[in-house]
Image 1 (cartoon, rainbow, N blue to C red):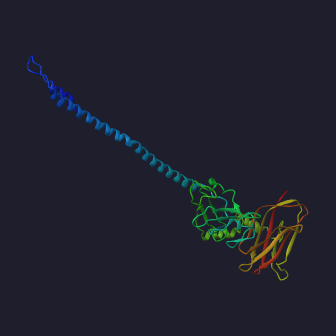
Image 2 (image 1 turned 90 degrees about the horizontal axis):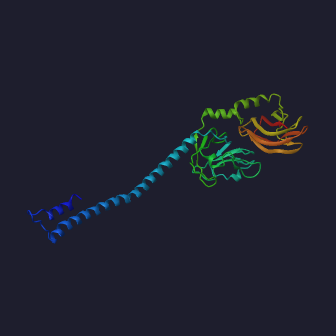
Image 3 (image 1 turned 135 degrees about the vertical axis):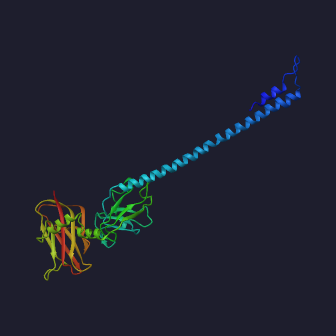
Length: 336
């Protein structure tokens, strides 16, 4: 208060002449002491008001700081998602990928997609340019509509998922999910983007594999064809006295097995050459009929076809087009 009240008292009650104390009149008290006290109190009120104003603004400042912290935390979460997606191992490859809004209900055995005839257990990726809740990786069922792949049907599995494409227009490309968490499968729009393009080397390797998991498997398969008949398989060569349409080859099984895989390929022929065939067990169709086109081997796994000791496995070629010169088919079995 800068001594205002004390100064006012000193002035009003100043010492008078010796033996005669000065007696202030009321006007002095009002003007000096009252005015000084009022001025001091008014100044104190102003200062208190200023402090209250400052304190009153603190909650708003705290809210603003908390808002900035939330933004930083969100950005850190986004960065973490990106980092995690970059180190996530690739998922199982898909046979083909389409960028059109293909209904999974049409991804059925025997239907053609991206120039390839679908077979059971084919993995098909749907990745539309703008993204959609229906996009993702589907598995072709033995009957009915394709279903989301079991390894890519939850939010955790989808986050940062990436995979390679084996065949079709996008063969040898790598695709990845760009959509960040949170993800609700079937509701959140999923955007898959191409991260690696095909090049001459990868395309050549893919062609050399011929649908087999590795070049080593491909070489083993080629080496097994020397006798014409392989175990549970057949190789057919075009000659003047062999009409591939209507041709069949039969093999008697010497031990009970469970057939789990079928591989078939048009080895040579004109561009677009194809063969229609089916496999039967004891004259009952067990697989097919399916169409195999030159350059696109049939490679089906995950089957479970029981064959007993002494049963007859028959590969029946119902039709051939495009001057097919060599065709090979084989069923792989595990001893029961």
